[in-house]
Length: 192
Image (cartoon, rainbow, N blue to C red; front, top):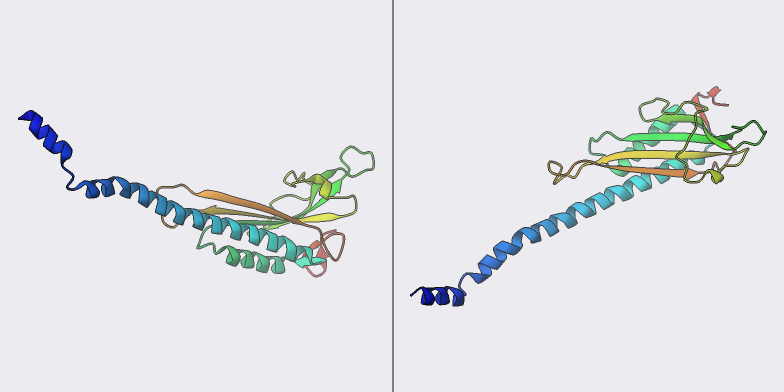
């Protein structure tokens, strides 16, 4: 009797499709939401990259930037990224070379001026700047404009399960109309 019951159970195929579906469904859902989440994260990453490049490009086209104009650029960056109420850090920095060893040849990247979206100065003037992808981008008489954007990405679907991921981008541009872009708190009060 036990042998016939085991044989009957082994040969029974009713409900097999439902069992297979129940086993495969969690994997299919994970794959589906993974694709949705991955594409959303990739879109935000591309938007942050575009925003950093746009900010650096627009700032490099000027000879003087009023702080109020920079604030408007920061609003534009937030609109490009579509921050959805997230706290975003945006910094615009001008980097020059300084003579660090006293031999008369500038060789150390330092901050000329910096400004962030809180209206503050994230890096003090004259402080070392080590975030340039290549210090050879600078020469003795020029500057480079650097845009830094830090965006904390939280998934709209799984933010309760997956922690926030920081998307950080840096974009650099040489000034186009002058050797250095000056930051001005008013038209008559600019950096040197």
